[in-house]
Length: 434
Ligand SMILES: [Fe+2]
Image (cartoon, rainbow, N blue to C red):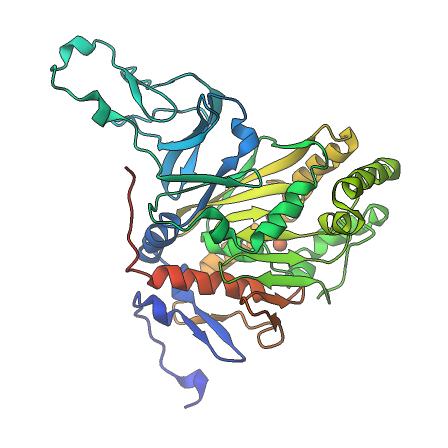
């Protein structure tokens, strides 16, 4: 039958094993994967509650008593550094009457005191004070009222992750080959230290995966961002490595079996108007610390996604926070280097503000596309999308790592393979907190 004349099916099942169809030439994803509350709920349970999710950068909780309130999946958590310097995370819900314990985004405190009845807890969760405690039975066991702890918290390269899954694999094993990209990104601090500036925050009415897939999408750049690039062109002296054509040849997209992926132009980072002398000094410091060749690699353009929702750009971190199947929040943190020349940091802030922040010329273009994607999801009869660019043309290593060209959909396929693995893995123990 002519494909155009096939009957349209409007009923959808949640058989995730049927959500991807792959042949040697075509990689299809069911549009149902982006649609509706049921899939979203399963994603939260099977992906966000099971794997490692980014919580914060170590610099945000540098000193003992520093805390940050954030989200792990859909659950509010407080991540903090205790008196011994260890990082821990607890649910942000008082065990007395369930109040939000910590309303501030960041701060420093010896104890977390609930605003409702002033029960107080150590940042590690231990209940230490109950006002008027003489009105509790002598048999009332305070130790059962500690805050609920996130079972696993670990960090790599300054990035702190947590997991609700008591049986989760080690963070290093989860990151796998993406560790190299984190190492190079972190090594750009030269001999200084990285710290995160306050996040730009914005939101869009669309599915969170539209943003995850877009992080390493080298194919859309010359089309969606054409008008932005025409503006940038006027200042082309500062953007000598930028490609202004429709489809950029060469470069790399990488996809890893763990679900992570990269977009790499294969050229040095833009200098963005930094004084050439300052830049030279910075490069020389990197060469002394890491050797000439590795310094070149460290300073090459690379943006990557740690599955499922942490994007690392050259000069900022973007957290993709799912809120609902059709609502997503973005927290975009400029990344600064303490001790670096002011020009280097000014350039990083400028990038965060003008390019990838809430009013950045790129983010706004992308969000408009995501809104259109979300509207098109109402076309239930359009059952598949295709992510086949570069399929069969990419290099596949023995470990399963795939290396495509800049405009290939290699990392998106890695994302979806991992997505399907997690979504169909119902045998996995779904752990709670202790
Ligand atoms: Fe974009």
